[in-house]
Length: 355
Image (cartoon, rainbow, N blue to C red):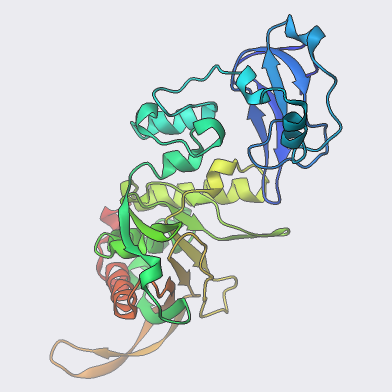
């Protein structure tokens, strides 16, 4: 978006990067003058590669022409010439301590979580703090070493029927909530408190439990499946979850997601693809270890046990909840207990008080 010699303000959009899933403007990390464009428009650049150099006005005349090599070849060309790495020419950063912050999105995420940049370890090039670093800042230490577990097939699946009568009663009074998904998310997030091993991420050779509950929701687009994230669902009521899900799904369908929308999920939810699909078996979205599938809810006859022990036939709203889970981390009995807890919350809650 700028040419060599142009003045650039900090946080001003500098270029656009396109991935398989998201197109996003990238802001300038510093103020100055665009001295050199390293990667021409249309080239593929490696993660962490240098795409441009920002410096002082006096450096423009002395700057060499932009090389025709791709970003992947640029580091080798620098090494061959003996010139210093270009990244050292723009040392200005907004971070504190060892963590360097170069993105306004990262700064905003740090502020929202009440963190200090100096307390976050940056995993990006040159120690820069990435958005995933911020999302994982409250992660606890490894719960279990993955190398010590050997159970063959890594993925397990359990399912049960859940009663949605209480949910449907509230939806009848509040149609603006649109779907049952927000209720399932709320119930699952509450149940996760008692099953912390289902809420976390695999990092390297270890699994880390995360206290925050960031829920990824599967959205099927023309270009494939995408899983945007609704953050800190433990702090949201049903209405806020419904509003958040609607907003993030709308942005996904309009191709307006930011890369930050796609990282940091600790648990995923996949709703039924159609009204006649009764069972959904979601794929595990690594690095998470559990994903909840929501089948279609139908009205059908079921056996109802009365208080005196007698049985009768009643009409109920029934849906199947299915859980895919990593067998290296989650015991099948714990997965089943989590589903039972979620179903109990769905059936027994006074949902009008949770809106």
